[in-house]
Amino acid sequence: MFEAALPKGWVYRLTSPDYGIDGEVEVFKDGRSLGLLFKVQLKATDESDLDRALRVPIRSETIEYWRTLQLPVLVVRYQAPTKRLYVRWFHTLDLYYGRRGKRTVTFRLSPADMWTADSADRVVATLQSVRALILPPLAQPVTFGVVIAGNAVHGESTGKFLAALLKAVHPVRDVIRFEPVDETAVGVRPLVRIAPHETVASVVITDITLHTRSGYTTSDVLSRFPYDVLVLVGLALDQLGHSHEAAQILAHAAERAVIVQDIRIAVPITSCYVRARRLQEALALAESLEGHPQSAEVSDVLAIAPLFHRSTLSSGERALLIAFWERRIERAATATSGATAHYNLGNLIREWNGRLALRHYKLAGRCDPVYRTRAYYWAELGGILFMNHRYRGAASAYEKALAIGDTERSTPLHADALMFAGRLHEARDTLVEYVTGNAAAAPEWRLKAHVLTSITTIFGFGDQARRSETAVAVVEERCNSENDPAKRRGVCLSALALDPLCAVAWFRLGISEHERGNGSTAFEAFLAAAVIERRVTQPWLNALGLSLSLGARPVLTHDILEMAYRGCGERFLDDAANFAAQQPAGFPTEPFLQLVTASALSQPPRGGPIELRVSDEKGTMHVVPLRR
Image 1 (tube, rainbow, N blue to C red):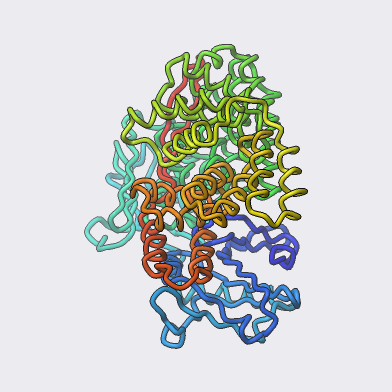
Image 2: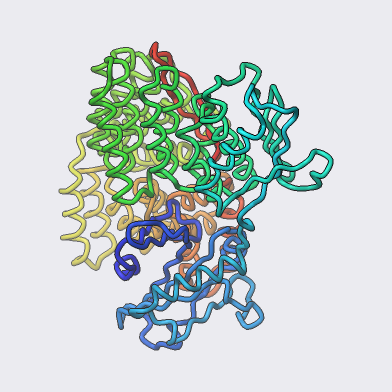
């Protein structure tokens, strides 16, 4: 609803996982970005009373998280009965009037906050003032002093070089400018020092050094070295967190610079483009370098920049990405380079176009059979097949990865594929052995080992072909019309005989067993439903509630909490509060919510460096780390 209300051309990108933020909006005008971005948190309500509908409870932990964000947050309230949107900036919240409680703060909107035809203009105007008030940008233009040692720069006179440098910076003069200064009058300021064998860009505590012992040709000193200096300045600003300003400089200078052909420079340039979300510029630079054999590795690194955002790319960015790699495939001079392009395209699109990704992975293996000897190729192919619900094919791919020696990563993934392929006993034995011998095994694998043991031993289900649609139909057609818990139990078991991994059958079985007073059996059923359909909150909450009342092992409760939060994100926390409020008297509401919140806060942040695999002209694979 909110995305549909945005002006044409504005880009709304989903945030995954949604830890307190649902999406991000970038403002465009006449097809060009205005450099204005903001975060969005969507909150819907069925409340018909407007005064109550405009009171939005927000967890205190979420408030603190929003305060750490560099971009402003727009709270959007959708009132379902009237189909109206109301919006207000989070930074307008006055905690003194927010009715701060132990766990939540009430964020109040007003009828005047209703989204209307002129709301988008108000958003743009507010964004510009918000950016000035609570997100103070880099004071522009930033003036860099230029200190030159000696009377010449790589054989050219200082005067000629300074003229070339000022000409190079002119198109980005609104961002930075250069001013020749004397070494004795430098003071504390951004500075570029140019010496015979090195050039250093310094901004406060950041130094970026270019070593130039090999020198420059006479023509390059005036035509390309000034752009090398601009690249250094951009990277220095990026290290201080000014990625958008740095990306503006790099987008202007990088294609003319010499140093971008060095992988040690290309990697931080790519990281900057990623943080500033300048994916089009990254692809353009990659394309400009593609014709230089010595720059093939650099071009590949730049071209894979969208990997960082592949789950949130807009439709336009996706089309641009696919078109770029299809051109590279068409221009591939060798089977090896064609295979690399097929592999990279498949890797980039696998989260949102699994079928096309699968095609390109297979083409990579055909163009260059060496891929079929690499464990990571088979492991990634197994993941794509799994996401496309081709579980037997996924199991086969993981088996090939295991045969090549990728046991640590592929063993549990292989068991997972076996499980969903209906080979329950083999999956159980593999996972039990894996978690028993691996103290650092992830909660997902410990829970799946537990659930598979329960399914095969307590409930007695075994290996079989899964008839998923028929099993769901049995539950939906017969459970709803049956009031007797014992008879509903029989319906659920008959459905599970058709598909032992039918999540809805396990969930309804849990309800029936709980009504019959069989708490332990109900717990196992709810946990099975949760593990099978991990993004649905209710089975997790039912399993968690029973685990506490039954006194389940602490490690089992911890694993349920961690996997539930990772699977459901912020929804799990919101639904946990509703779940606790609906429990009968005597339920330990406060300890329950404290446990849920403490577990969520203890989750390690996702992300960190990404390792990219790129190949050189000989087909040798290299691992290149990129910083987010």
